[in-house]
Structure formats: structure tokens, C-alpha cells
Length: 444
Image (tube, rainbow, N blue to C red):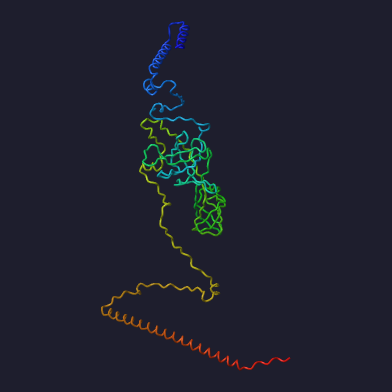
């Protein structure tokens, strides 16, 4: 109260003119109303007091943001929460990011390269086109068409620069209410603002047009001498396993080059080159602008759609490459040239190795056997003859068996007689040698 009295005395002393301006009158009215409100609501709780007089100065923070789109103010919804954050130095630039990513275990689909993905990274939400790859044991970044199911892989995309080891979260769409789990991938940033050389396999196929011993001209693999110059010295191979090397391009026709092989190839050989081609990461990044939409459309923001989604909406089917379909293999029988042996060599060959050209027997349709239909009597006669033939076969079989038994008994008896004879001969030799006089000693 003392301060208030001093203030009024000071104002009265300085007020030379009694005429006050409109601004001063309005200010005095506001001060009076503020003082009245303070006296009236000073005993109430803050929550009840806010309901009556609103937020007083000192209970809220006011931020001024420059260059804001007009849609943000036009469609502002106080009930929709807005999170405000700040960026560090250098995070306002764009560049290539490499992240270690994994498909979420609860997400029902696998992610495909070049399909748009909405990523939440730090304070930002943006849509980009990632390329997935995996690092081989020789440090080659091999391109992946789809993400592995239960393994981590690497991804590269164009987006705002962020700190390393920052966590990321990816979803396919935010405009649909999905019955399944919506988070598609999770991961962290590994490299920032560094281009990665991602490569994928490339197999080029050509055919020989001219062959000179172990050298051949190959066509159909390249389209210009410049492409051939890029792959000079590269290793090539035929389907049969003959290895070779690209030497130099010909002037005409364009795309034909000379190659050497470790063995002579033939016209029907297919020559192929296995190499790697660089995959360029697309520079695509759009910010999620859901806050600029009307209140009833804030949850229906839609950016770039996937190719599968576009085909589904337009009722189109995936294009079918005829070269990728399985077809039955039809191999033509190769007609080899007849073997020609010189006459001089034929004369030197032994008789059993001489080549005898026998004319082929031509079948005469008129002289071929014709089916004969027998009469009933003839069939009875044939039946009786077949029965007699069967009886004769059984009889001969029994006779052959009896003869084999007799021969076996005869061989056994013969072996026994030979053993007895051999024993008698040995005894006789012993008797003869027993009575034979001994040789007299030599005299010196």
C-alpha cells in the first residue's frame, strides 16, 4: 500500500497537463481491471482461477517463429499437441546417411529397396528412398533387393544430417489405420555425409562371330567401343568352362571385341562376363507436413507411394519378363560329320580295325510280316504242339540234371582213385630209395 501511495503521489506531481491521451486512459483501465481481478481471485486455486480469467502473464511462454507457412496458422488446432525442438550446428544440411537397420520382428512384410519409407530421426520426420546392402567379408557393399528377415543390414539414403548413433524408426505409411503392427524398421546411424559405393551383380552374355584357333571375335555383349574399353582385361568364360580374356575392341561393327581363350571354342558356345555395377542412391527426401493440413486430415498425410501400392490402386499386374520364366528345355540332336579315314591309313590298319561300310538294309513295307488269324482247328493243333513242346523241355531239363549229377559223381570217384594211386606211387618210391646203395666217398 505504501508503494502504491508513493506511486500516485509521483504521478500527481509529474502530471502537468490534466488532459490524458487515449493510450494512457486505456492503460489505466487495464491496470484497474487487473488489480480488481487480483483482489477477487487471490484466494482461489490456480486451476479454478485459470478457468475464470485465463492464463495470466508469467504462466506461459511465447515463441516467435519466422517464415512459417500460412497453412500452419490457418489450420492451427489447440487440441493437437506440437513438440518444439532445436537443431545442433550442422544439422540443417542435407547429405547421405548410412544406417544399420533391421526389419521389426512384428512387422508382417519385408522391406524392398527403392520403396519410400517414412523415417523419424531426431526432431525430424521425412520420407526418403533407402537402398539396402550388406558388407561382405572382402568389404564389398553388395546390394540387397529385400531386407533379411531376422538379421541386421545396412541402408543408405539421402536426408538431413544427424549425429552418429542416433536412433531411427521407420514406417511405410501414416495415412492408414493398420490392423497389424505399424513400425516397419528400427536402427541407428553409423556414417554421416559419406557416399557409399553400393554394387550389384551384372552378367553380360555374348556369342562368337568369328573364330581363329584360340582367338575369337565376340558380339552381342557390348554396344560401343567405349563400353569395351572399360572392361579391357576382364576375365570371361564360356558355358563349357573355357576361360578367356577381353583384349581390344574392333572399329566396326560397334561393340564387337577380340578375346583370347585357353582352348579353341566353337560357334555354339555362349560367352559371359561376370562383373559388378554401381547402384546410385537417389536424392529424394520430403518432409512430413501433416501439421499444415486441416484438423480432420492431419492423420491422413500421404507422400510418395510404393510401386506395389500404385499397381494395386490402378489394377495393374507386375510385368513378366519372358526371359525369367521357366520353359521346357528342347535340345536339338547334333548331326556329327561321318568319320573319314584316309585310304593309306586304312591299308596300314589291322584287319580287325578296318572300317567296313555296310549299306543299310532298307525295310520293304510289302515284304513285312502280316498278322495271321488261325482257324479253331489250327488253334487246337497249336495248343497241342505247345503242350508237347513244354513236356519235351521238362524232360530235357530232367535229363540234363541227371547227367550233371552223374558227371559230378564220376569226377568225385576219379579224384579218389587218383589220390589212392598217388599214395601208392609215393610208398613205392620210399621202398626203392630205402634199398638204393649209398654213394662212395671221394678219394683224395
